[in-house]
Length: 414
Image 1 (cartoon, rainbow, N blue to C red):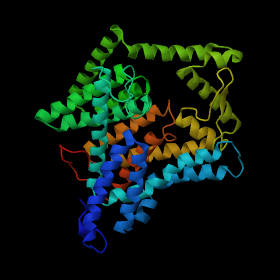
Image 2 (cartoon, helix red, strand yellow; image 1 turned 180 degrees about the vertical axis):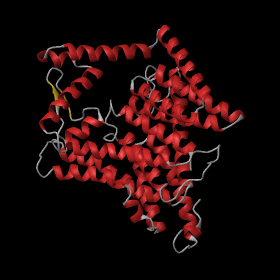
Image 3 (cartoon, rainbow, N blue to C red; image 1 turned 60 degrees about the horizontal axis):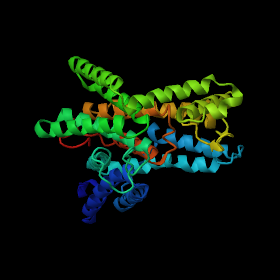
């Protein structure tokens, strides 16, 4: 809770602002994996908390942080490109990426109290636990619940978002399992196992596999001893062997993805529309088209909305290459890519200076995003993009209000 003494003027009303802020942070965590309406409402409530607190002490310090101004420059570069590039969806792209401007007010919000990060994390993990329970209820027990498909039991969000958020929640639960003891440790371990099962064997989509491998790999490398790392590798190999030898949908999806890429790459240009008309085939076609566009305008790109791919055979078009690195380079050239990679690097450096438990989780989450950016434009997407700007805001807020050295083992990072 926010202490009245910590805010300018210290009126009695600040105690209620503290409760309101904690509720807002908790609601924000719940809204991300469940509802865009709740998420957007929580963002507005966070701004209201700032206005009520009237705390502007750290605005200048935060504004000078590259975690704040690098993403802002990315948006400015896209907006300026509208002056000389008149792409059909240029304004739409600027609107979608304008969420990067929310990092500063969100950082100011999390500065209000260290506990706000904990409330946000608890809301996010609670929502994912409920989603996991609902998915298992339908997918394993085959009990009807709303419009959830038993063959692809994603809940609230589409399968990519469901799997990605579940993978991020799983690595946080894993860290909590190692920090707790007794029943809590076994409870978190059970959540980890169920989340992995849900991602690998139940909900369709391959993004979750990438997120799992990246987040667990990075966290294990940073957090475990040499013996524990070997144990983790052995467990991964055993699970991998079982997955390969026992027929299951996970192996089928991986094999299908590889086949789709090979088919798309092998065809002649005239038949590309037919042979690339699949999930990974389209991503391959997007990448090839992006490379052509980058070669034509390597420095400043083609401006906002500069990517365009049309599949005449399927009467389908896309303005999204499903690769954040290609998206930034096509739209803003090498300059835009440098700003984006600079942002990721500053996130890593800032997270690396934090206490070990928090550092390891944040760097693992960053690793998950960096890996999945190869197959998705997550900054463009609503839920995934908002989560990353919130994570950036949290890391930026720690630059002026550092977390405690050893956060409580029973809660999330503060």
